[in-house]
Image (tube, rainbow, N blue to C red; front, side, top):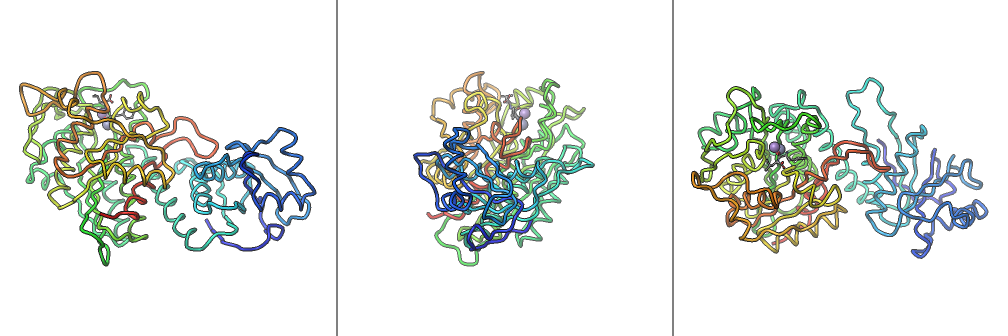
Length: 477
Ligand code: BES
Ligand code: MN
Ligand code: ZN
């Protein structure tokens, strides 16, 4: 897509659609909307007075051949009051116009140019790569009153998020651990990152028994993908480690899942996809902190060599784990990845994983659950999420939850009791992060949209990509 930054009066903008933001009445009327009102002889006044449009988030109104404007259509989209709404407003306008065959869109929003570019690019995305007839893309985006620099940055971020969605959207027959590793390698070569892939033999030598135990039921070889970003002149002493769960398909293994809805488990690699994609943007935006990414990639299958409930594995940390449920596999592969990240000198760890159904029960599809062993890191992550416009909510993680993780046969079981399942999963991971400050994002409820929103297609959302990028860019220790 071509993105133009322009500084012309709105009457001179040439586009299939010119979109202006219409806020709620008490939030005031922006300069662009006022100007559009003047040019059209009071169309905006009439629109609000009619009660058909109130500026609420995602409302939309359209005028053809607007008087005094060069654009073919004038579109007013409801922006509510907040930056999140500006992002969604732009996405809504793009999706609504796209379905009408509009190919060029100009945005005249009074502020939030970055959110507009991000929202537009995210709204434009369709998960239809494998359809014979694909949706026609919007090919030109014009943004009024923005700086080239903020548009460049927003574009890098949104394109990274769409890259994560592309990776996650691939079906599991086409996106195996080896394919994911290959995609990461290609990305790294293009972006100038170091990339190292640990194969099964290497992981066996090192003693990653938890990761290998999950992988052994599948014909697909596992991979531990490592990506390194090194700043030219690092500031501060920190070294950020990003870890992402990439189960390319989760059948549950021998503790097999019900077949109903199992097709969704191709998205069990969204944490890994988010980390790979964030690294691409980090390579371009060059924060001052070193960042290393760890993506354990496996397929969880119930093959003849699959691990059984009751099997005991030795993790890289030396701790033994009794695998009471083979469907609690994400925490097993993350355990070894977290230990490995520690041995490579990461001072702070943040992971993202579609880890538990329980987080969906707790927070629904709205907020990502945030767990942390360290208050300062929790603040950093939540702050980054807020600036990035991603909704996240802190969950508790106190000592008492560790009580559930006891077994007479090994150092730990891989599941707790029925209750507080998202928290016991986090408590399990915490044991492997050990004394390294660590935060965990459970994205099981937010990584996938079951139904399209006006501003976003059905399917993978690319959640956590923006938060990771923001976290690295704003890093200070
Ligand atoms: N990948 C799933 C978690 C999940 C469930 C993601 C639903 C998205 C939607 C994870 O590997 C899993 O199966 N977790 C189990 C844990 C249980 C066996 C303790 C779960 O949540 O049911
Ligand atoms: Mn599972
Ligand atoms: Zn899983």
